[in-house]
Amino acid sequence: AAQNPKVLPSPWYNLHVVEAKANDINTVVLALQEKMEEKDGPYYVSLDAEWPTHQYTKKKKGNVSLLPVVVRLPNESLPQVYLIRLKGLKTLPSELVKWLTNREYTFYGVHVGGDISNLARDYNLPNLKDRVRTIELGTMARRRDKVAKGNVGLAHLSEVVVGRKLDKDED
Image (cartoon, rainbow, N blue to C red; front, side, top):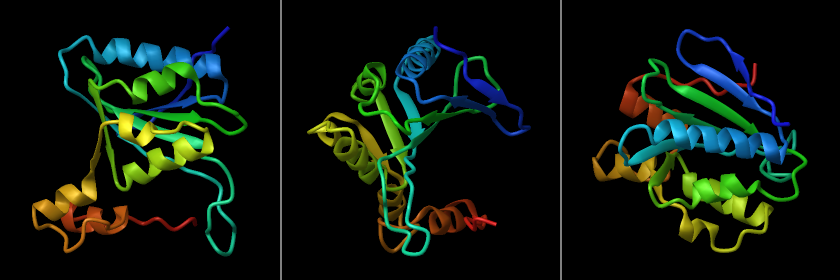
């Protein structure tokens, strides 16, 4: 049976940790869609992808192992953050793929197209990038003359758009 994700308290968001089990991920994704669709679309989801990196070179050394997504749900005052663990899975769960390719949803983030490409490569999903609607925040900031180039990182984008320094140190 699928387990409910662990919810970790925070004053700024509700954090849910979803274990790397296809059934658990499918159950959470279906429940999320059902809650989001209580109101009329369009539906926007913040998406990121994380993978293990080499300690010294910081180069990618494994498949995407964590998929953080953030959604605003009707009747919820705080954003809902889902850390969807993928480590050890050979394929992406079917409902996750259906959600990503559902044209009613748009997934946004910094370098989100690259994240989708990594998912496609790591989990053998040809043409996934062509089937997922995305908004690149760097490109959006460039079009609004907030940054000089659209391929900026999250730390710089945060500083110039939000006016807050983002500390990404591992300490």
